[in-house]
Length: 418
Image (cartoon, rainbow, N blue to C red):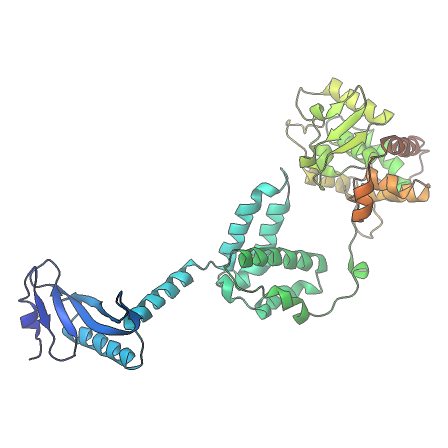
């Protein structure tokens, strides 16, 4: 006799069991409350064996009564019967579907994956490094608008192509860095099994061919080396102290990078040996770098010490913090310091190029100049056998550079003095 709703509501709180009478193996069992129960479909599994090696009898819950009505329970039971007819265990199918849902729920979007990668690696960047901000900015600008919300395991090579193509030819340096960053993130995602393959392996093949790297490389605009003395004498040595002039002259004389000079600490300077030792944490290559101090560099440090405000920084900004790179760049723009790039002012980083070109024009050995500029030796064999930093030879070259600047004769080249 078919089970009715009226009959179902008579089920006892405990021990009750009512067979449906319409769909085989469907029953309503007590669940601790009178008039309520659990729909159960009882069957013999076609695939799962019990301890004795025989087909296992299984009970599959189909919902609670009265929330799940008799009609809904019958539909679910009929679906189970259909699976059994095909040799499929309905409970196994349900559990597999649940695992798949959980797996999909655990999949991160591309943006979430990027954030996880950046969080994991934030301790690997040097203190004060711009890299984390540059990574995040490029991803936010170019990648996230198109693929940021997509599950990371569903992004295709064509979708990465669509991210890169608009800037691939117009901004080769930016697009290359973006490609490299996305590639590192996807390699990490593959290593953590978030994805099974890295679509970026073939993305380059989908992008238009570029010209050679040498024809597209953009250099930092730099002041021609013959014009550096005028800048030093008429601008850097001709103005109020503490306005980044001293830091800029020291940077020019040393050949060091902006961040290395701006963050220079007194504790790094040994005035007995006249050596400035920059710790690896502040170097681009991550290795300690010794800088010999020329006579003029020693003079600058002595004046900084006499005029200093007791800060740990050698070149403190007016408000005692560290000068920003933008402050130094703005100083050059304000004084209209020309460069070898038409329409652009010289850049702070460009003084390294000025120094490097002067060295080439004045027969300074290339290996000495490379060590002054703290460039990484690209030849692994040469690097392995290098046992000296040629500090005496570097000091000699730097003194020659300093003497060249000091010999300024007053020929105007267009630097605006203030």
